[in-house]
Image (cartoon, rainbow, N blue to C red):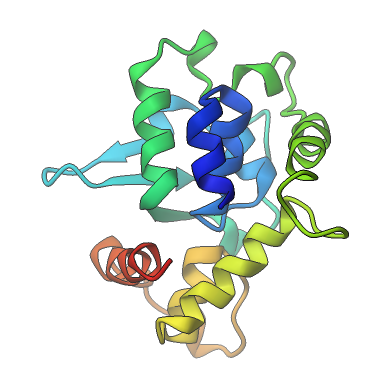
Length: 179
């Protein structure tokens, strides 16, 4: 399992891989996070706020969201918050300019992952697998879309503010326990 290998190596590149693997974030979303984008609630649960920043835009309006972090993604958030990160970035090596360098993050992570993933797969595959993992725990499609920041079909889907983080966490916990 890639997440276990990431914990063994325990450096910022493996943190980035583990964060994406267990959250469904896009690589650029994760690479452009600031430490303050991680939120800890009164019960100690950690979430990531995916919001636009001047150095990293979001792909769509639905991309702005809160993702409950579980499994290796929660481990990563704790590691990032426990370390003193340069300039407040969770992954400073990919944010040395006014733009998040997601291409560099992608190249480095895919190079390391070659030893652990089937040929022809890449970092982006974690995003697709999260959708499959959520389906496997019978997560409703609109919750899957909210967690992944995917656009939904229909006018009614755009009404309201979406599901509370506690509901999203319920399904993310199921995914984490279903490994």
